[in-house]
Image 1 (cartoon, helix red, strand yellow):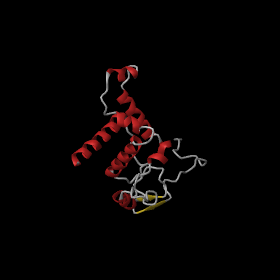
Image 2 (cartoon, rainbow, N blue to C red):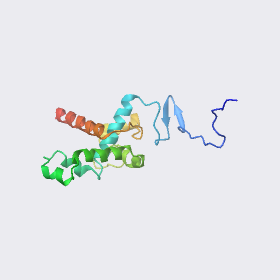
Image 3 (cartoon, rainbow, N blue to C red):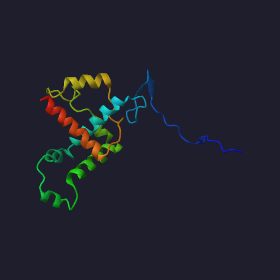
Image 4 (spheres, rainbow, N blue to C red):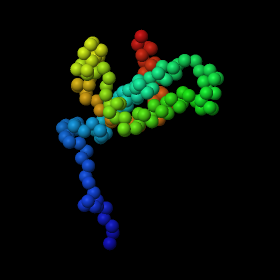
Length: 160
């Protein structure tokens, strides 16, 4: 007699989502949407990395990254590379799902929170129309986090 691949009756069934309409998953923002397109996931991953870099834990060190590194900076790191260490910490922060409440918010997009004109209307419109889920992201390495932010900075400099 061959063993059956059945789930035991006591095993819980976890809901994937509380509602699905036209292929869109609603009401459960803590899971990855299996219907996300590659472009959506890429954009949501970029937002998550940007939120991590500009988080109060990293923003000061990020601003100092472009300063000239001297030999004493590397010696103070005891043989380590301070730039690589920074991006390793950022990637761990991005990939840690315990940080979802902090990283899943699109900053400056809520007109109710930013009433003093700090709300970006284009961001607000995008958030309302697209309903991005920043918890639906691709896990990142230190090199990919660094590359995403480098690409963003290059794009910004070309626009100015």
